[in-house]
Amino acid sequence: MKRYIAITVITLILCVSCKDKTNPIGTENPLENRLQSYLDECDKNGHSASIRVAQNGDILYIGGDGLRIKNENLPVTKETIFTIGSLTKQFTATAILKLREEGKLSVNDSISKFFEDVPKGQTKHYNSSITDTHIGNSGKSGLRSGLSSHPEGKFLSEVYHSPLDF
Image (cartoon, rainbow, N blue to C red):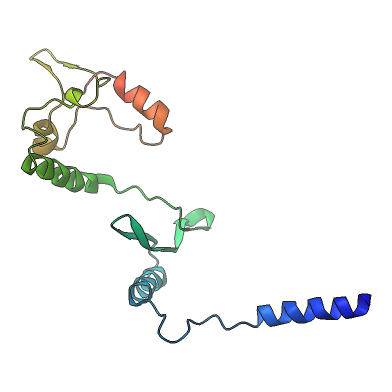
C-alpha cells in the first residue's frame, strides 16, 4: 500500500511539473506581451525597469527586469521602486493645474491650508508659506532635500520641523 501511495504521489508531481506554461488559445494579453517585450529589450541593453499599469483602480500589469543594484547583482522585482528625480516636477505641475481647473486650488493658496503641520517660512525678506506658485515657478518647495530615504513617519516629522529653504 505504501508503495502504491508513493508511486501515485510521484506520478502527480511529474504530471504537474510537465504542465504547458503557454497561454491557452485566445487568452494571450497583448498589453502584457508588449510590456514584457519592452522589459526584455531594456534588460538586453543593460537597462533596468519596473512597470505597473493600472486603470480605474485595477492593476492591468506589473513587471520588472534587469538589476536594481548592478554592483550587487540584485534583480528588479515587482516591488522595486526607483527614484524618478526631477520628473516629480512634471507630475506635481500637472496635479496643480488639474486642481486649479477644478477650482480646488488657487494660485496663492498656502499648502498649510491643506496640511496644518507644514512650517511657515522665514527669510530676511518675507514671511511665507509654501504656495503652488513657489513649486510651479522654480520647482523649489522650500522644503530641504535629502530626506527621501527616511521612513514616511520620520520623513514627515523632519519636513514639518525644518526651516524652509528659500
